[in-house]
Image (cartoon, rainbow, N blue to C red; front, side, top):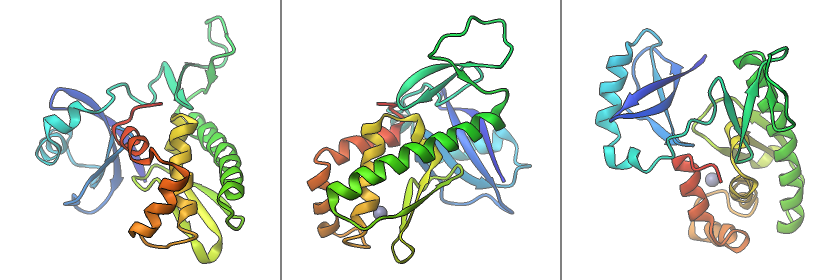
Length: 213
Ligand SMILES: [Zn+2]
């Protein structure tokens, strides 16, 4: 099970994605401007806050884009801020609105959207990079952005990518497809990545800090 809570860390409101575990993990990750931590769901917010303030410096968190990926009133989709509207709301509807009656429906819609978008980007870069064809799967909230199961011809991608611009999504697609040539993270592997994405490092930095486009 996964839970998303907003915690004030060093004065910044940060989305913390919790995975239930029997004890608090010593390692935690950040990406998309969010922090991913395994700990018992019964842990108090104060205890999590104190622990994360030790793990992540003010200097690091100050670099994050502090606008959350979504709230009750908006949701970022492909790097654009869309107003979030509940069906039958009194608001005047515009074509830029995104409908979801609750967070469950929001995740559902985002996952479906992520699947369609990632499949089309994978098909595009399979041709450009001249790789084999892959199936794709979208994973729930996880610090792992993508994974290439080479023998199964399967790529998995985190649904969170759908909040970011196509340019940033493509960096992850190119990374995973480059694993068809090298299954490690050697300099040979990165030569393939840089060939198709010269500003790869800049794009990854944006994804890490939660910069939407
Ligand atoms: Zn990799």
